[in-house]
Length: 246
Length: 246
Image (tube, helix red, strand yellow):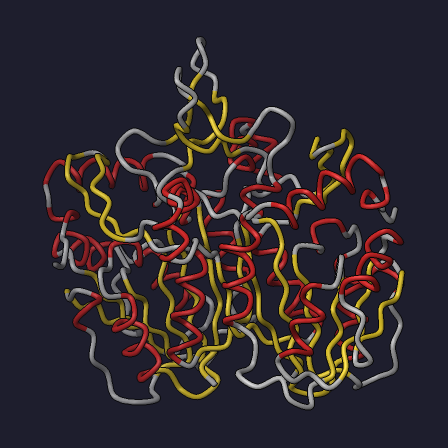
């Protein structure tokens, strides 16, 4: 099933508020860590941006010298907003589920995907399509919610003390892979839990070499500005993987 | 600091009782998973067994055709017991801390280590020594306590309900790497917590390719015999990594 929560009116408005009007974990933790894995120079690079959302990253890649970016997103609202905010002759936005990509062989230097893969049911099939369209030695870099987080079923998450303070993270159901229904702005958001080992082994079986794995914490500057971010050190919110087609 | 808890009388006796007189998680979960990562045929293989304990694994490798096994352990009691139980002209036991190994270049086909690396402070240095003494394309396979388990400080572990049932695993301090003092038979057992990403990246930086990562659950037979083992699916007790010198 290809899930398009981003075209739900309530979800979309809440998400835009989170990403555009405030500074969430993405900005101070996921994006800075993700970008440390990119090649120093994006000049002449052809990039596929999977789950491009409203185009912020696609546009940033072009600003760093990328020759061409194809941004894919399942949500018409997102693609429409991307075209308003970040139209550029080097970027092509396409409204398409990630599961439906089908590109010619060996055409991208980089396939990049930020916080989208935990929505995908058939991870192996998507990895095969990515491997197919990457050039030899091309890189796949993706982030997703950490398996320690996606493992949770309804009742899990932070245990809280009497004054609402975080006591510890309630981990359970780790080896029980599959669908997780959650409330995130709206009820019934579906994510897919896979273990860290399962993610890494599926990459290797597809033909990728693992280059680097990150379980990032916030930047020092961000932690200085916002003490609460130090709590993210207590359990990793994101998993980021850099893999190479060999 | 090189820790030699296994020569503590109380610890040693309790450990032998656990491993020899009963069926612990090692036998039904860690060892079967570990062995799935070994080459099908050990004939002609030269093996270094790091943290060989009382020699059970070293002896098994020889029974599977290994040409020569060097078993290393910090504990004189363990090495002495290994010599009693599993003496063999193809096995050489040496009482030595893993941190002090120093072998000639390119001499082992396999370096194997079961549940010892979480006792090692300087993981990077040990990996460099292992890389040095492995032949090209040689394999390092090791298991250790899972970072989700080593992360815990004194108060963490399973949260228990009124009737002692396991509610969930209390995860905390994940990104705070370093020393953990625990009680395991005796007080003050020192383990070193490293995150999964840190373990994988240190291997890659040393020159290894990641071949496979396991967060094993018990075998189906074992779960049928002992229902309680299903609870190990709720949080992974072990991390097992297979890496290749390239």
